[in-house]
Image 1: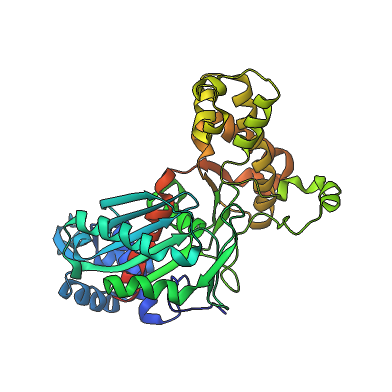
Image 2: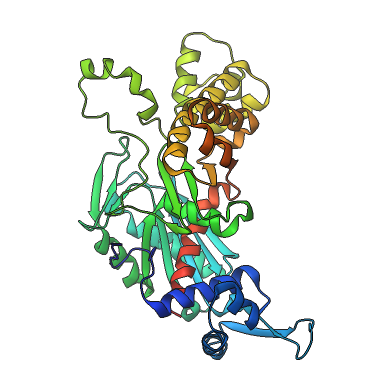
Length: 409
């Protein structure tokens, strides 16, 4: 049975009216302008029932009558489309490195945005910084406050529905946790707008499904570097029994040194970090005296090496950078192959940043999937880079917040 807790997105809709709300409004969002008859036919719903729902939405100004279609005989059918400006939502991405907020309309078109580095604080101390980003974005939007209906937040870490906790799993900042409701209420009390929280990779998966036409499929995986997995099954985000599904690495911090030495064969399940370990490997290689364009790009200061620097060096055909990026792709590809065998998805979307290096990275992933996955699921799946790039989480959170508007219409 799906778990529904206050403060988390509604992934599985149980009430009949809410299901129809979502189905009708989402179809109009995707296909509009569209006629009543086409909505009835495509959803398999009685035309009278559909018309009753549509009249209700028109009265609420969520749906607009925008003219007439060409007649195939008889009366010309009236066309309807979503009034994207009838309501707005806020999407927030609390990533390992940044806090980003956007205001979007119901078509998830961005009206305004705000961005700031994520402060080095425990997760329980983040809400004031999130509030600041939301306030900046909403002020810049000039949207009437009463039209902003929901705030959706995608956050890195584990959201445990059963205990009602959000866990920050970043070993660098230090593992900390806070109460989910406490986190939500702090933000709600500032803006008097409902707040919904989801895992960042789950939000990104929904964002790609919603806004990337190539990824609008029933079964989709979104690989957020090595720090998360967003899962869409039969059109719905899947979060598991308690909301924790999608962690694609094992916990190695509990191992003693001698235990780690005996578990080298499990390297593909180790945590590599959002850069897939390329920065650490680059620094080690340069410390050994290996010549590279990477070192030139940072002016000889190894502490300035970043994922972006390595990608730029790889584009300049630097041998070390290409090797690092390709190795990262092959290693991640082993993980992807395992997931392809388990989930048999239509699409696997690769995000997190390293995919910006292009074909050398993506081809290495595909090479591993072809090598390690079973032939049947490997022949079906398409592996593509994220279309939304760094905005996948924040737009996914906004899209999920808009989905809540549809559900409650």
